[in-house]
Length: 235
Image (cartoon, rainbow, N blue to C red; front, side, top):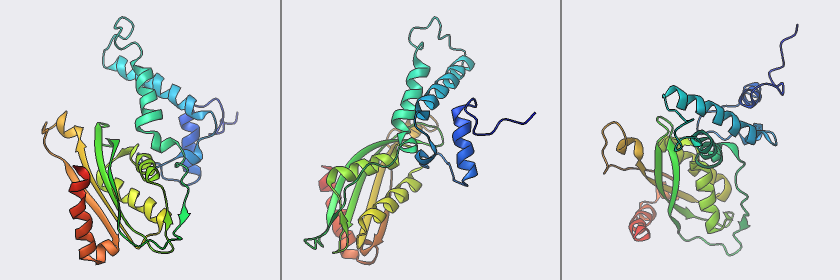
């Protein structure tokens, strides 16, 4: 008897998606987008699969979800939260972003922020609340995008299990590819609940890191101007 094809419809949807990823040699780490390997209707099935397995987690935690009215729908809520909300950046295509040519040849510093976004620590799946500032130094060949699109792209990148050091680089890469500026700066300040909720339980610590490219890396005056304007933007 022949073994079932790895992409057979009766297999769990997660296995079918994983088979496509592995066959294509596509990395599928926690912070990778895998939307291109998910077929129509499979996201609903994936959410249902996560719900069933989350129910088993609750059972293993010795929580009586049958008689405890507070947790009867917890598995359903958590599955929806993971697949449709806090990890949605893994499972959906990037937002549509209309790009406009720089017909006015704008070449002055533009700053967007603070953008508040939410992600999760890939080590403990605890919430991370991020504030992001973006600096753009356009040139005549740059593609200009609307203010809301910076927010949508940032949200798409961050709505995945992340570590901050990688997230800021991923966001910079995405913006640099789309806008093609002379200079790009991204600063991210994050409040990690894995520090508050567990471990050292330090409620005051935050982590800040940055990526500076092009003119922001080579021109200290431009970098200084961007950094000096950030507190004003955060007021």
